[in-house]
Amino acid sequence: MPSHPPINSFSLIRHHLHLHTLRLSSRLSITAKRNSSSDASLTNKTLPPYSVHSNRKAEQALKGQALARLPTSSVLRSLFLGAFFSSPVLFTPGFTLLKKISTSPSYLWNPDKNPVLRAIVRPLIYDQFCAGTNPSETRAKISQIKSLGFSGVILSYGREGQIQESNPASDITDPSASCADQDLELWKRGNLETLDMITAGDYLGIKMTGCGKSITNDLLQGNDPPKSFAEAINALVQRAKAQDCRIWVDAEQQAVQPTIDRWTVDLMRKYNRDGQVIFYSTHQAYLKASRDKVEHQLQLAHREGWTLAIKLVRGAYIENDIRERIHDTKAQTDESYNSIVRDLLIGNIKGVPTGLKFPHMRLFLAGHNPYSVSQASNLVRILQDQGTLKILPEFGQLQGMADQLGCELIQQGEDTLAQAVGAGSSPMAVPRVYKCLTWGSIQECMQFLVRRAVENRGATGAVKDAMPALAKELRRRLVDMFVRRGRTSNSKVGK
Image (cartoon, rainbow, N blue to C red; front, side):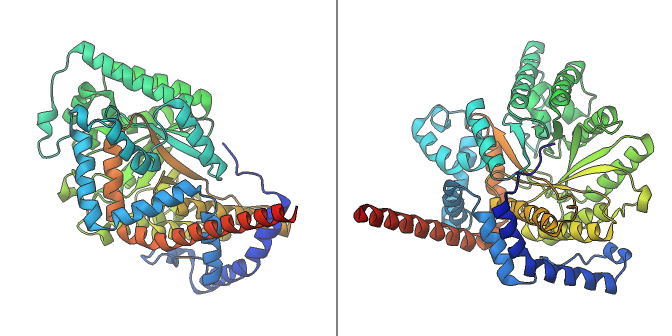
């Protein structure tokens, strides 16, 4: 597994001074919690406070240090897109254009073929959320992300299918055997190529509908996976094992999700054994059945002796999914996500042993909600301090979304390690932080980009909250640039 970047002596001094006051207030807060409540109190619906940083200035300093990691191009695009997503005047026509591009077969609406359209979509949208159109661009983006301090990436191939949720049966066709084999081969080849771009500790993200219409039909009809699909999966597994990578199976629309869940459990049952974890299933907290699904899979894994690995997300298909299966309000979705996280971290899941006998499992928390991420991160620290943490989760955000949030998690982890080194104590384990990327041609990634637009639009509050800090960071960089230029000019004059 990749480790955090080395921290030099200058960084240690800076971190130690920065944390002297901040950690004192955090320790006082944690001590107060110990004196006023037992471990059992964490099973109620009140999670820890939003932030461990009771000192507002210290919290702002952390945000500033985190944003300083981002390249200026990311800061500029984030500000532009923040204005776009938070403005109805800009968003409504822009989103209509994106949906048109994603579904139209016309040459004029294909950004890979229309240079004018490509000149608009590529720099403003695609480059913010996607890794690249080819392996060279993608590897460069991955290298840049890891240089910022991220532990690794989750890389997905952009090819996927789109189901008409109002009439799923209309998507059922009878493709010829040769077409089905060709689609599956393209999917396998694309994912093997994706594995070639990542390294030990990274993830491969796969979408089963990307296999083509034949496999999608099997998913719609609830069939068992065909032999050809099992062979393609095995090829990916062998490559992933050789590279020490993992594979997560993305959630998709509800018309196909029950079959995806069944196939994924079978893959975990086969490959997540004897201490080795290859496959992760995706759980969408905006679904009313999300908790039942977590409980069922953990009970099944415990009973059968394999390791459950979960990626928990809020959900990304609200625009074209079965509305009745989704929580009625955002508050209900927030409670669903936060309560599942809490109960997994403290080991309080119905139907499985608690305490030291809680089943071993893996948890990846994918999310862009600052409140939920801060609560989870805070709870991890409290439980670690008490020695009762059941799972050390990993965190991740999509490329181009909540970039500052991922950087804050990295900064907190480095601060924790630096404090331990400064105090001469053994550092506690800190959660790893990842970026999720999709690569492929612009047209292949359009469905992915449309979902990102919907997610950002649904989180306009968080987008607006992030903009002042981004604007402040941009001003700081401009001031620094002018100051450096002034010094250079004075130096030349002096000579």
